[in-house]
Length: 209
Image (cartoon, rainbow, N blue to C red; front, top):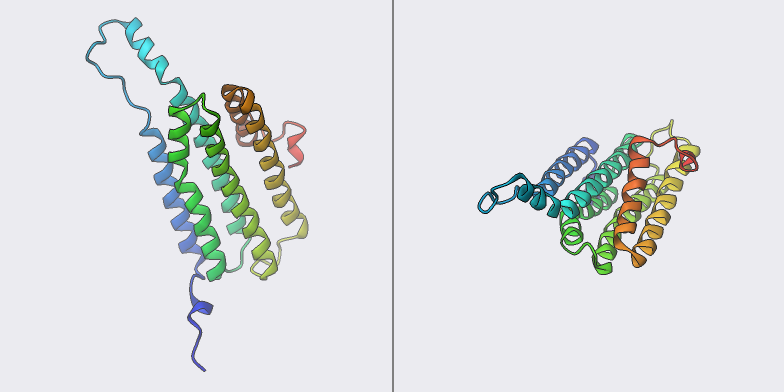
């Protein structure tokens, strides 16, 4: 009997991890390119330079937010990949969908920086976060259902990963609702939430997630 191509394609975890790392590296680099040095012409005093640097505040704020966000999602994806014994074509395409969401981050970040007081810009950014979380959740469900996990991966470990995704996506939605009243407040809340996840994960009540 001839071998079905789909049964042997997309099964290399190392290549998937390498592609993911490369795309994350490129996207993180693209984010910082939106922070441009003020034009020298017309700047003759430090006060003028301070004024121009102040105009960069929205871009700097959204850059820090997206850098933290991508770092958190990179850790989340690597956690999943580390729990896998093998991959298959379907799981590879699920993670390619995740990388699609990653590659959209420079656009949603730039849009939010340019129109930081617009609710629509914040909603587009939130949709990007929702896409990333939804695909990672789908990946968890598929790898568990398809028997792709290592033998030492426990149900408690999977439950913790699912719970973290759901809780943080719910909190992102809260940030969006706050942003309907004030986009700056919504963004500030997002930054604090990501800081908690990245550098202070033991702060209650989020330490259990």
